[in-house]
Image (cartoon, rainbow over all chains, first blue to last red; front, side, top):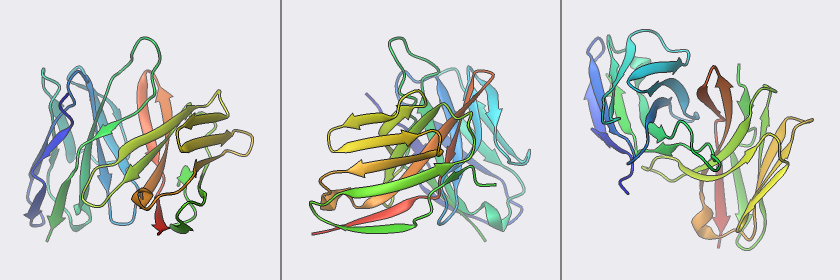
Length: 117
Length: 114
């Protein structure tokens, strides 16, 4: 069983630039969500994708956008980068539902650490 | 507005003793609660969960207790081991129109002393 993988692991951008982060879901998982974790904080929900459509969003501006592909992999795009966008970006995959009980767990990747200068 | 709060940023416990990590929440609509453990340079890993209709769930050395009237949950680790040293996040799930949204606390750094 393949876990959640994210790329790149680290990157540095300057203010105003655009960035694309990538995520491959755990095998068999059809839902992917993205989280931003700033230093000293817990992960904050950005949005979730199911069947290639966004079906939930947190308090993030429209310059945060995403895609989910037919193979359930996903991208997070951030335009017009700001200094406060510096954070660890976590991708998590899950199953929308299962028969026989659902523990509700998310499976996280190791994250992409973005630094905006 | 912090809907899920972990008021203790850090906790130190002697090896073999009990570790108790606490979490408070404000939204009575949360239907599932989870604990995650995070080591440096790794993503959070799932530890244990509890449905809002239960008050206790146990898995080996880990037990989660839920007190709905107090809007409080706790994670007990018995006995604590040095390998348990990590940051622990409490998370609560909100289900709206078939969408799951998870709200995380700010984490508690547990240090188990050998």
